[in-house]
Length: 402
Image 1: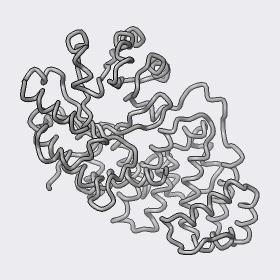
Image 2 (image 1 turned 120 degrees about the vertical axis):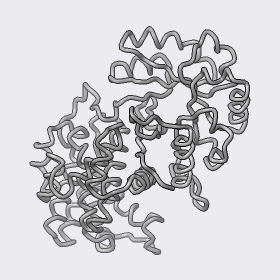
Image 3 (image 1 turned 135 degrees about the horizontal axis):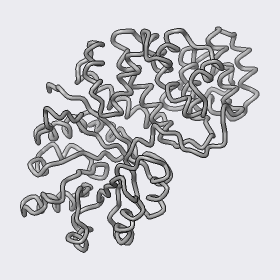
């Protein structure tokens, strides 16, 4: 399938700031509007990437929200997505057509979620639960609280409310208090205010120390001595090495054996993941998930051109690109406390050097940015390359979280 456009993802947060799902769209370009064929192609492509014939749904408990138009509601592409993980968003005005209404009701009966956009509650109110599982609550710049109250009646129904755009944490709190179920906005890139903890906690300090030692090729006995100072860390390493994914075949019980089996590069990568997830400074889980997806995506984008070893460094750059927000410190300060290669530092500070463009491209996929096409072209990556890597990174992140 020839692709000329790029997938953009936007996380949907629940009131506890966890990611409940992702909205996937083609990048919107004013000069070339998205056609019904494009939307159908997106569903088909996504299904092919994240709904494996053997392994099933690769995104665990995540729901995907996809834009729909009447023409695609009864197409074959719809049957390739698991209904319980699929929500189609459609304009309420389209339901005036009886064929569209019956197609929507058939999808609902089959368990597919329907999100209504631009709904007039006064007109659809009582019939709403039979048609839709979600309704979009759009906020203009005015009083979010007053707007959300008009939807309060829906709290008693089965219909869940998705607010957008929720652009500040203050608005997020108002919406959560009024019973909205999910939120779309760029909040995942904004640190939550009022976070008391600044800098590193003890667990992170030990992880940083281990990372320095791995970079300096310290011997295994020295690494083991530092690991033993943190029981939780030791437990996590043994659990990781004994996990099914690692496939050792026999249970590893000593730290020394675990370190020897793992090897330095994978150990460094594992510590990188751990450093981000060891943040206790009240940041939202969505920030962690974004860091993991971004790191993996940047790595996959770099793999072809740079090879496995260098791509591992790009992963580290991607993971660390949100470390300033996770730790509540300026990036320069973060970099003073850890020794990284010049290429990784250049990528983090200016998106320059050998790795920077891959990180910049991974970031652009989180935003409806016109830079995606030029960044991809500069790296000789086609839209298909980027889109495959994007969905693969999304699936990988779910398994890491688990």
